[in-house]
Length: 522
Image (cartoon, rainbow, N blue to C red; front, top):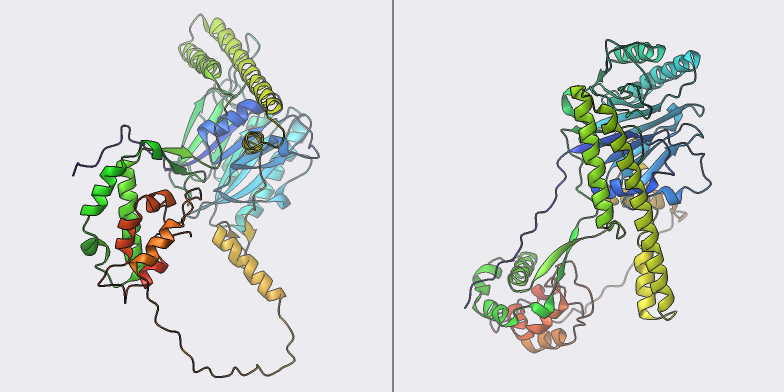
């Protein structure tokens, strides 16, 4: 027998190893919505806070959503903040800490290992009195949050529009907002982790300042970096990576797509014929263990002799993001790095580098808009060319529908005040609530007595021919079951498979194996 074939290309799976929180002053969410959605698709942060959204609260904000994320917002016309929360993150909005007239958003995140209270802030240029009121509100709300959650970490982040010559880059001047922000940080025991300029000035002669701050009570567990802006924003993207991990990996995951037409069925048959089934799969007295062992062997043979590829599920990449978009994004990032380097070196060509970055950012935005429009036009032409109600029409329509967001069940509050974020916890909470509200008044009635039954079930015998008939009736067009073994593989080797299920020596006593074995899906 030939040795098992190796895959031509190994697939490296991506595991979430850290908790990533990002912040950006987006300077208009409407104008940069495509860039924000593409950033969520490619970077996949756990939390993306956006300030200065500059939109009123719409009657229906569904068009702002993105698959795999939930949107929480506090929109104001010339200010506003919002956050995109990945679906595998358990969080709770703390609305009782928010002031409707201020651009703040409070969030409690439960990572499974720690609790973190986030306060996202946008301070507009509205005068010293309004600035003092904002920081007084932040101090009072932070005290209330930490009193309610004393073991939680506190993080205040956002665009504070503050300058302080002893505390914030470029250390040139101090204004009222800078003094208030510094006093707030000292009073709450917070450390400021952003150490470089975050605003890219649009006007020649203006200085690049550190306006976007990240204040935290636990600075040793965070690493903060600054990268190029999202879309045409004039503020850089602030990335914070913490040293602990969320409980779940990426909710989208991957699934295997098998190419059965290229399978080596003969070699797989030799593999099954020479495999030591008795020693490996039937050495245990536990039927479930034997069934799992047989399923593992079949899946191992499939990976050896059937080519496959791993494809992401639960959210697909933008099909309209073509090579022109990728090239424009690359030019924008390169221009930002060149400008940042010239700024640090105080090079004489700083102004030209800044103009080059502004031009690259605008070109990137135009490339996204043009590519998305071309994609929509192409889909419209394909839909109009297909007969209405045909299989091809509905297949394309469903693929288009998959790009739109679907509502997800938010975290639920348990009776003890903790959050239920897993599907099992939510189902248990609903079941207990249903049981509590579904009690019937029996009026102390006596339960009925059941008559005694003398009959017994005859012994069950499953033989080789019965298993063969069951395998012959398998529908190869159905999806594989929980064991991951497709029906086409079982049907292709029905005689070998039936021999694994029932042997001459075990036909009288091993019928239990069939119950949990390979999910025949008749």
